[in-house]
Image (cartoon, rainbow, N blue to C red; front, side, top):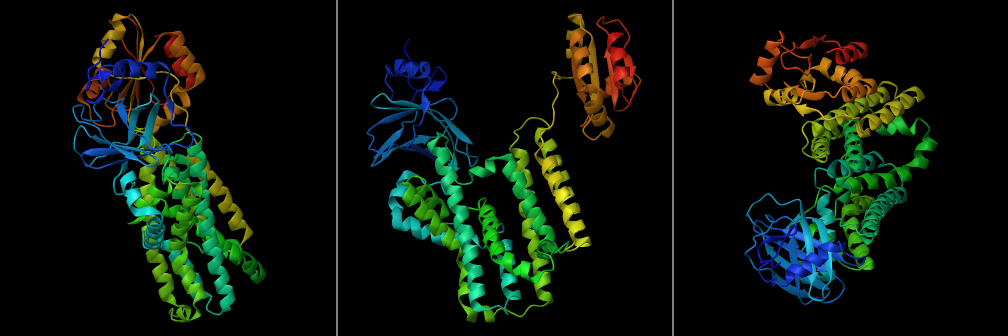
Length: 537
């Protein structure tokens, strides 16, 4: 069977430069299920409005390669793939099917080298400004990457994600003007070591996962719903403290002066960690090329570049602790500190709102799914707000700390718990679906519901998802239809009127025979009522 370039074949689209013989080659590749890139290989994909840059690092020069996308609408089939041989791999420039500012989330397909090697690729696509292509990496070089990383890390301190954390450290520095210079210097060093350790941990995890065949990039942890929920909770809790609901330091350090001194340097160390974590969503100007270069180099080079990035982030606070004269120029503590701290909680709350939005998007586009997860996360944040009230009401007391701890655990449980879903298949209600069920001689159960109807949600979770009820649905061969009245629907309104109802919740059992009368169940369901109605329609 011949396969023409530019046409889809076995799920792939051949580029124009592929000869007719490429069909058999790709067929063989698909038959043997092309493996992902081996350990030591790396792939980088960046995009502009009209092109995709696919760079593959194989550790040696590659002369030729072709890319065959699984999605025939991802690339312009008639366009030639421009190939550039690199010292440690190859770069392919691919034209997008449609010019758009909306970048594709991922690129999937098979890359085939001129020696017959074929590997499946499924990797995220980054904006060209935030992901370095191999050409730009070659241009900046190692020294340039070190410099860009340092400058980019310094700029991170001005980002809304990081600035509130740095501001907290500046307040603590202002409040400790009576300490000895050596003590302030040790605080600065502990904060710096915390940032370094965090950056090294992120890079280490990234390199280990990549060695295992995962294609990951900077910010990969934000692809985890658990991580995003945890970050949103942490920042929300910090924002509550900065807004004045409670004093975080007083609540957890207690009244003992010796305990405060012992935990002070550890506090500076662990403050560096959230500073690093909240910096992840922000890619400061100049950072993109440096990170892209680092992830394409050796382990030693990558750690050097990430160390430079970490030092740039830690530099402002470290300089203030190392220069006593600079610290003396900071205004004396006063009411201005509290007012400014409260104002600085605003960017933290804004970051939380953004993380909640990301959390919902991580669960895909299934109707209602992302909204349901957002609601659970918001309930978790409400529990955290209650925990903050407890700490503010009983400052530095065991009762307040224990109550807050219980509420924090409950918050994480609610936010991260995966809810049970319908074990049975519910289809959308329509007159056509109802008529088809009657033609097939099957009884029908219709759930007239709405998202804003609390009684509907209680009935659904407490009764309709009961195991015995679900078993009866299956045993009696019911067709299950859900009439979602969240938005006004004249067809649903008309059907409600036909059974003598004008609102939800409404539950109707339609016998198998089309001419039999419908049975309307009570608004408040019980398992016994539903089981009796199902067995005696």
